[in-house]
Length: 282
Ligand SMILES: [Fe+2]
Ligand SMILES: [Fe+2]
Image (tube, rainbow, N blue to C red; front, top):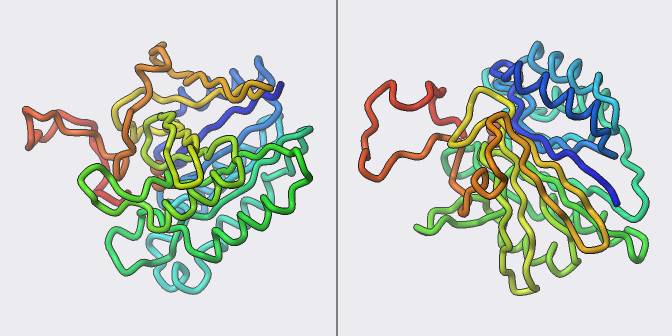
């Protein structure tokens, strides 16, 4: 039996300090075997935000893996964004990430971010062919019988119910991961939790999303996923600051971004009726 805390979208710069203190305490009490952080460590990839992320994550006891999120690429410095977009993240990753050595279970990363795209917004997901190839090579190199979780920032859902393109290359990636018997894909980005069985041509793939630990809440309180992995698969509890039961915390469809949903009877919500979010950078 292994226990993994899946946390995401801390967004240092707009972090929720009460949520972070609570998660740290949960980790101290429950002592999970590992922590998987699925991106958006920062709000605008500022150096001070990365330093704060580094300090908080370094103080956690268990080994940690971190993925890069769209907010972790330079936002203000466009030359750096184009020339070396992952430099700041890599520097932090080198300080905080420790190899997770769990018997019979591997955590394999998949990059879904892009420095730029032929569409707007650039914040949406894109599984490039080289990124998918790197993940598949890592999965194929695992010893026989080793189970795997894949960690990424963007949910791999390629289109929403209206046909709008979400993550480019998501369907191809999901089919390849399902063909390899991946236990689940852990992601963030949309700031609400979900647990969806996604059909693919190679069989079903479990897609698990974590909420946020920032003030950028979408439709649910701050939360993280508490995963227990045993012989019968993954048991998932969405632990949250509102004492909301897990099923009520989980959304049923992956939205495009982390913006709060509009009520159907209120298509143009007046200012002040929803949390004060930044412009739509997600
Ligand atoms: Fe985010
Ligand atoms: Fe994101």
